[in-house]
Image 1 (cartoon, chains in turn yellow, blue):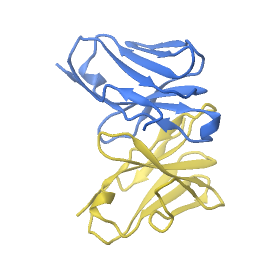
Image 2 (cartoon, chains in turn red, purple):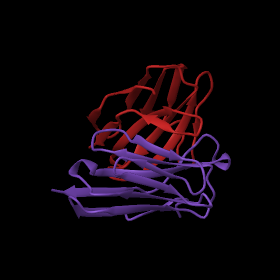
Image 3 (tube, rainbow over the protein chains, first blue to last red):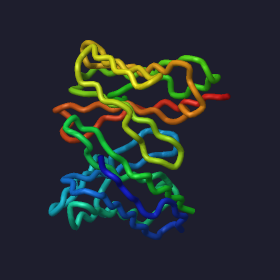
Image 4 (spheres, each protein chain N blue to C red):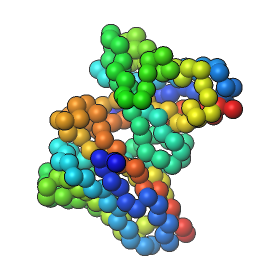
Length: 114
Length: 112
């Protein structure tokens, strides 16, 4: 198993500002995944972060809006840039748990943009 | 169109009732997972099924993988208020690489 800590757990931000979410894992992992989730809804993958290379973004998500850092095998950050109310969501960090693709998730960061 | 169609979207039942959540696809998956998520928490893995026709039990929860590995179901017997949460199915397969395909989710509310 893996223990994943995310910070902040929640924040209220002003339109036009940026917020960086941190994700710390208690073991070394190759890939980390960042998801977005509207409350009560399913998960949408934003990007996959590998250590030592640029993140791979899914359709509809771009690096300028969601820059990601992956400085080592236990840590990653996701920045939500130039925020608008449409960015209000829960952002989740996750890592692989097994060889059949299972995921461990952090507790999520609930972002509200005013 | 979702690759994994999950139904129902919302279920509100009384304590003690039984329920089934379905996850269907036209695609074949090498494995299928079920997660439960409570408010303010991340999703937590409940089970993974990998063999067509496989049935797994977790206390009052029964998970089944379809023979053709295109669908799955989650059955809860004698639901408890503690079962309340968002249930998500997710499929894995070679054609999706390292990524999981998630269903839309089922919000379950069990009233006491």
